Image (tube, rainbow, N blue to C red):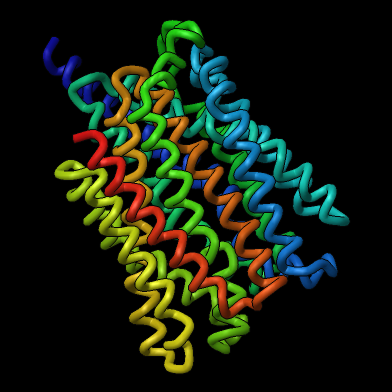
Length: 393
């Protein structure tokens, strides 16, 4: 009996591990679809014969769609059986990326960005919970961390990978790759992911009661300011490297890859420090972010000094992702899943605002001044974090 049970248990663990790994890769593909557009902006703008500022509004469109529809759609759809839900989401991404690859103009490309933005937060808001449900409570933490590894990898490397792919095969080819990967992940989940128990349906009003807490709302608003600071400059970093620092277009992707790689330090630091002081770590890394961004322009004449400034920028930038997510979820008295989704919406609101502000700065004061404006917003975020902390005490 035992000789039969042990292999059966081992096979179950192996199958569960494969399911989680596929879910993590699916998370990478989905989140990469959101952020990869930043690395494609210069080549996309040239090909469609539009300004870089106009192309940057594709970032705004995606971000604002996630912000506006994410919490409601997540609350309405989170009760659905997760395997079917995730497969449907990946099929939507496959079709949308294929449409983006053949888009003849920015308007069609805008539609191709709007559609997946509707369902991205649904996946992001439910994937980690599903991973824990697949493996059981004893191994839930490890499973959740594996899924978030896919999300973190997309945040860190999705943009530079997109930039490198765009340089090698063009931005349209990059979207074709994402379409194929989305379809492959849908097929893999169909074959390997088990059907999980139907989650309990909570009334929308019951979940939304956290919105009555001023402290929670203050933390969500702080995330908007933090991500505005982050993406005012980062949305146009590829263009800054080309036109301000004089980096060859073929090398920009490698610079962005280095930015993401050094950011792994920030991801580790942020995860360790946020438990000690969520608001304090937000303030500290916002200051560090501002310093790194402000230093990047005057140091752009020396590639080694520019690299040092980007290292500071990258560490702070990446640290603020988990810091903001944990800070907002800890500020919620209940309904933490909705709290996490609302932070995603806040992050996308800041991403969209940052892209708008950056585009306006380019139009009125020039590309070289983006980093200084972004640093000012980062200072505002640091001050806001201190004020919220003082009021809480």
